[in-house]
Amino acid sequence: MMSEAPQDWSDHALWWEQRKCWLLKTHWTLDKYGIQADAELRYTPQHKPLLLQLPNMKTIQMTVSFSNVVFKTVTDICRILNIRRPEELSLLKPPDDASKKKKKKDKDSEQEEIWDIDLLSGGPSGTGPMYSKTMKATYDPENGMPMSATSVWFGENPLAESQTNLPPAELAKMYQPLSLVDKAVNNAGWLDSSRSLMEQDIQDYDKLLLRFKYNVFFDINPKYDGVRITQLYEQARWSILLEEIDCTEEEMLMFASLQYRICKLTMSTEPLNNSNEPEIDEIEAALSNLEVTLEAGHTDKILEDITDVPELANSLRLFRPKRLTLRSYKEYWFVFKDTTISYYKNKEASSGEPIEQFHLRGCEVVPDVNVTEKKFGIKLLLPVADGMNEVYIRCDNETQYAKWKAACVLASKGKTMAYSSYKTEVKHIQSFLQMKNLAPPPGQSAPDVEAMDMNAECFVSPRYAKKHKTKQLTARILEAHQNIAQLSLVEAKMRFIQAWQSLPEFGIKYYIVRFKGSKKDEILGISYNRMIRIDMSTGLPVTTWRFANMKQWNVNWEIRQVAIEFDQHVSIAFSCVSCDCKVVHEFIGGYIFLSTRSKDQNETQNEELFHKLTGGQE
Image (cartoon, rainbow, N blue to C red; front, side, top):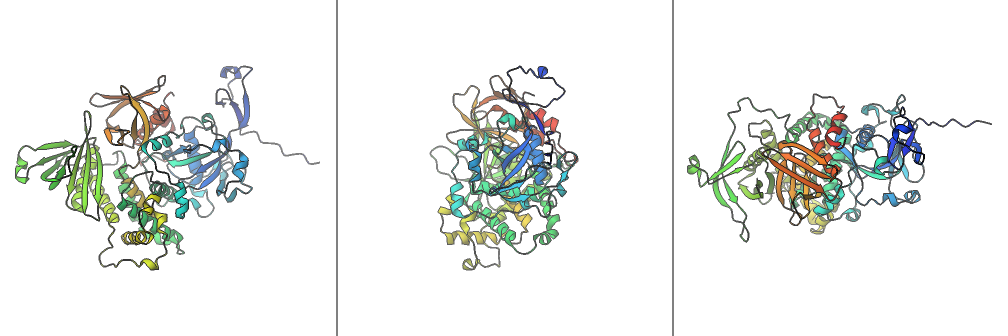
């Protein structure tokens, strides 16, 4: 009679149920842990199966560590999936966290296609009706972890391919209008990066969302980041289709045309890799420019002659909204110098005192543009002691708008036009305007709608699709497509991501908070470079604080209150209503951590520094 193979217990460890902690220090005695006779200890595997929904909305099953802190677990997940810079991603509980109430037998009946990936060497393979695809990874036998990212996949990595757009009926089922309060509730689900999955009540086969959490995408390279670029594009695409971020009708059509281009190239029978190769250098240059625009400033190189700061001087129109008044613009002579805009009655009066000056450091810069109607406006929200002053400036043409908008964006960060990123920002804005131009390029006739096979409603949000007839929508998307018809697949994805980043609401995570001394709840928006206090009833910004002006922040864990001190003796304190204060604390510390990255470093992140900045109690 054959004896059974011995069971491997090397991955098991003790879990203390009452305290919700792992007993991983094997050299400690139970007495040192403070364990009494009535303690409930469970001997259980440290690695367990987990369902992960990727940014492209596909669900995979992976065996992941339930004992490592989430920061490390996400790093391991990204290594398997071949996504570089894992510090930009994290795990989010689904908004309707009904997965815990489901029993495993219910999961077997689900129709959702799930890709099964084994994380551990010798881990369980997907079997049964719920596993329709299996991806295999290459492992290092010494530690049971995957080898280098370049050797993980056999053949092409399917996660680098864009997903086909859903039929309009299925998209409509997923669409739910979101208020700022809804967005705040959804953002409460980010897991604590300093604790393990088990410590946060995550169980076997629970479903979590893997998402790009921090919106600063560093060191993107098309040669190595096929999966990363595609998943970024997919997260951007779904945020547009489900209206998780606001955009204008013109921008919606631009995004639709880029999706159509990407869809056509993805479904093409021609080999895509060969067609992309000649353009890699051009794409890398564009990506490098993108990094300069978005990073915290350490890649910006100030020009040598700092005293010779460029100026802008043009005749522009101004509007300052007041209650019960129509919007009427009045023409003035504007001068932009350093980080300040001055305006005068006319050019001749510019040698004297200005009518008024706008100091742009810390302001919000919002585009007010419709390329089709030749409307090129800039909305400035200027910080004052009791909130924000609203100012509208109207430019005459695209070139003028690009220069002034770029200068405003840099000035809001405390930078002048002497910075090297100014020209890059101008080109980026001009490229964005070109994509938004829905008229066909000169010399090209309008597309033959009848000859094209397109389901136009797949490429826009359900709410927008209802506003237009299918034939009209198809024609407008095809007209916009002619402006980007020469883009390669990678370049089209990158243009989509860039356009997404240009939206006013990009990267802002919302939370419901109660400021110290206030009697009502308000919304706090956190972005990669600033925090915004927002009136919950109107949705309008009240004031903005930039991370660059932050001196220190801390959390009073007893009363769960976040306190922040800025330059010029400005201090704020607030408690979190929609989530634990640790979630907000981690966002602030995480963005500061990401601002320390540089290309001189290798890709190994300083995990100790991350936990020091985000860990709070630790």
